Length: 536
Image (tube, rainbow, N blue to C red):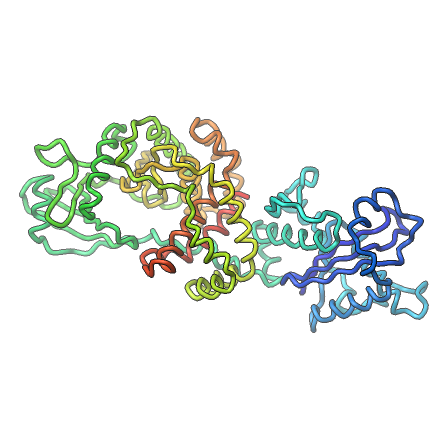
């Protein structure tokens, strides 16, 4: 099946209406457009003159027969050996007016018959009314705004048939790709490849631990936090190599030891001090250095911090835990926001976007060649298909970057692996992501990552999540003061974080020649699609 999106302008909503213009756009984006010069002049209204005819260059208009010949040739090329399913916004006029053009190939036009005189690639019952798809997906037609749904901030030439056909294509793609009920339909029209790249990848999933030697460096560090009793130590494997994490066991007690560069010691000290003002049952508290009033131990070449090993497991995706986790996370965000901020904290500023990276993204040939070479085939196909939409959406995010100022003390990465669940108790870890940043982006990123993990682990499907979000999760967000205003720009904050992460990966790899974050590139593009399917 080949899809062609269709729009027409005509002389009025009546049975004997006549065609003024017609625009056709293929799923691939190829298009053709004709304006006609033989429509019924007696049916022309003032509205038609002002809104349609005033935008048409009549010198370029052709007869119905010329338009029919051009459209027939274009459709034959699109069809090949397949049939075409026309997609229109409405149930009748557009398709009938197109079909009527085939009268021009009939010796007796008055004897023209839809069943007998249309070409095989059009003579079938599988043409599609987009309005019906919207109704099936639960989208209200009363308030449906095509430009808004297609995420356009600039309206083009309304009542231009080609513009409207292309706009219909954008709306169709969003609905079909983001709505769970169209899974089988995506397969039928050749878009099933996009289903294989969402909710299928997670880099923070399995953390293995391997024994390491109890060298003098470890002995010195552990003695300064605990005692000089015998201990065993294992290193936890993780993708991000900015720091090293170890499990220490001594006297049947477990602890976490983290090493990091000396340059970060002042920041980690400040983070640790602030954590000790939080309730102990909310977020993990670091141990102080024995006999000292500080938390970071500095050695000749590394700094160390230690905290208790929490009972429980990282969030495993169980959907019945979502509301408790989201509620606890909002409590944490409010507590952090109420605390005194120290200038020594890291500031993560989402309001500043690297212009050099933006230039790379907007260089289409460079971007498609270099990025596609680094990602999986499905992601590469997604980028190729939606490059223009990606750039448009990115520019819209950057235009709103004034909303992303660093305005709060937050945990900037509350994903499933930083949530420890033990029966009904929820606690949070990973103090290295405590920073001064944007509360809107941090809150929505948390909601997305926690909820996404339930879908990733197949604890619920997308439709079940959407119902749960509206009935249970959204009301939780609405009750917390810190998230009430954020909900107005929920989608903007969510995709801004994902685009910013993609910018960071691009900057490090293409400008700094540093691959440290490339392991996350594929997942971040998947996250972009996932976020829109979950929340748009």
